[in-house]
Image 1 (cartoon, rainbow, N blue to C red):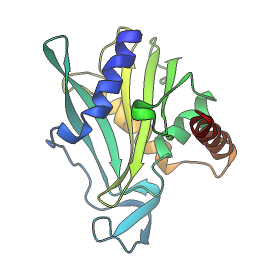
Image 2: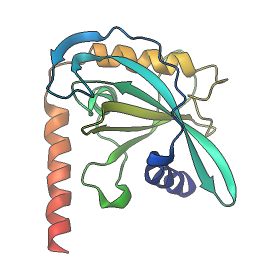
Image 3: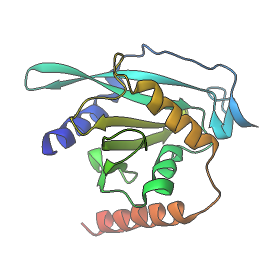
Length: 195
């Protein structure tokens, strides 16, 4: 698991170097459109998204380049949508990963049963970002054999996409996740100031 953690930290550092080859599947937004003042993201979608894509991210590890696949839901109302989908089903995350000491962590759920009809456990890394160029919620998903479930030839890829797509569209209005999440962010920032 330590190697996976190092790999993901490298992944986040290299986001700026990621390949933009995408498979956009929906151009008409899903959910309730809300107009913004940002020309880069003119609409964001409550309980929805404009489209999604799987971003291929090259990561160099021990003189070898591997590709990670990140499922991104674009123009979401909140960059925390995938985190909330996971929290609502599985409760509090296993780990918080903060590359570059960022206050907003990547949340990791380990050994969760995403699909009732699959006899597998999964590790899910949920993230997202809100900036002038974009707003998205994202996930990386690995099965219990450390297979990237968003890889092009993985048989579970569409199932994972549908799981999170449906999860975002059916988010509940419970605020428990946000209360716990913001407490974690605020506690981390207080500790960082004391150092």
